[in-house]
Length: 453
Image 1: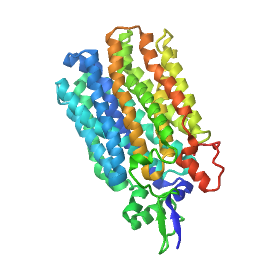
Image 2: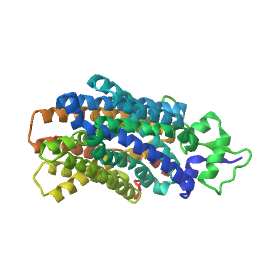
Image 3: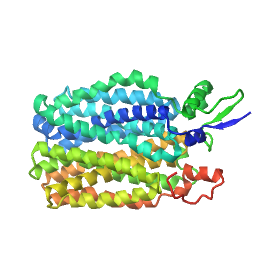
Image 4: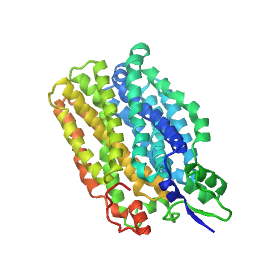
């Protein structure tokens, strides 16, 4: 009787059409997710004018979605390891599509905030699940590249919101960009049919025939035999509560550092996503030009995500992240100083690469750090705790905007978290990661490898 290690099977497989299908569906979901999140920042100046709200009140309205994202990431990230990742992803897609569209049907700030909170449950919940999905099914040698390539759809969604917003806001008002967010709900039946379930979940439920079908598609040379037994990962199944597993085997301190890094990174991401257009408009740029900065921010995010993933597959992902957070501190600080327009666009692009792009690489690192059996839980809790930073960002920066402070001080406030995140990531103990344990089980030395694992 053979013991089949499914994670090793996925690790050693060569990229094929099946991997491409999973990548495509996860990317499409994240594009929709990114659109739903960015649409509030794109429409914020028009919403403030239409509803007659102050900058601080608008910050609370934006934060309502982020508050929902915190609960969504924790609850729907953790529950996916219990009910199955595919069902959790479909639930999230329905939540953020329907309730973002519903927000476009209201003119009351309180009802708008309630709809955005419910949409936020889906926006936040889908992220840890698609990262866990892509991490589980990616070949090891290109895992970080595929995860960051998939997650760069988040920035593509932001660019789509900016591109559509420039025309739709003028032609049909801010409500139109929200109503357009309801279209992806039609994808749910195709997601349920096309996306595979988590292998760890299938093994736990005894659904061996499905495991064998997926294994053959992952690695066409694999031929199942009668009597085969299947293990979801080298480390075996987790025991005890999923949350408790995040602090076992010496992972506790690093889990805390991941939470700090996520908090700081998401503070920067949502400060820029929510207020960049308004800050640039306040600096004298037209609304169209201010939205162009949002477009450049998200274009830079794609470059940063894919480039960061490429570097992480060739160098150690931890040190790639340290460098990216340091770049964020410098580029965001310089945004507050007078420079020529080409240099300003370059700085905005670098800020996007080193904040939104870095967030995506940080998700990839968390996906590699935790064992497969609690991967969605680990990513979900890091993302959920990080959402408190995302919630605070629009409120804090909105308060600063309302105080009419110099532009330099606004951007310095956004840059400070990058310094803290740089320190937090540098303190993560990679030797306690699931990847390091795999090396030990395979006879490795346990030392930090030259490449991301």
